[in-house]
Length: 257
Ligand code: NDP
Image (cartoon, rainbow, N blue to C red; front, side):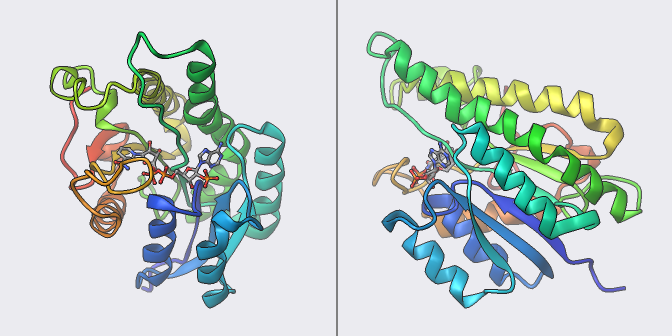
């Protein structure tokens, strides 16, 4: 039997890891119904590369405005996506958008902490809440038991910097206090979703992309976007109910909490 075609949504899809995810997912042999590539400013200069890519795959890629800091844009995006996916629902939601301030505890301002929380925690929470009906539809439409990213899943892009057990190895390299705290909160948000939505057969997973050469990762990053996304796509394709709530790196290795 042919694999079912899936609908996927990616936030922060105009550059960095998000843009590379759109590229690799649309070019993968896996049948694709719709790929919603979300960004803050679809018509602005920072979305040019994404728009060029979307023009090559007009039937699949849909560039949609979504600002993780703006609940109104999240609701509008969810409504738009719902009208396109219908009862088939949304199979995979990737919360990739994120921000980072490279500041120590003593340098971090309350405003930076608030801003980081807005984008990295409250954004993904609101996105999950608004897209939940579409994820539930996808789980129902699938009709087979179990969990997978072809059925209904949320992948939250986290970071090894959220790992409390690894802090002694990572703190001096990148303190980024507000970012660490926000990603640790994202991890807990994900575990709450695991508990609350297990009965809906929606899979949740946390992925660390590696230290990647993007605007956020900087030039000293250990790997390029292609390698990171290739790894993350393989990991996402392999996820089952056994990895529900897992915190994994781009090679599929578990990260200690
Ligand atoms: P980049 O800084 O290169 O890209 C960040 C993306 O997030 C951009 O598309 C940006 O859009 C978008 N974004 C930022 N704020 C918002 C917002 N409020 N609403 C919608 N989109 C927003 O980062 P990376 O590609 O490197 O990072 C992607 C994810 O991977 C992040 O969650 C990050 O924390 C995580 N990560 C990255 C690592 C790395 O080494 N690079 C390591 C570990 C985790 P815009 O152009 O509009 O600013």
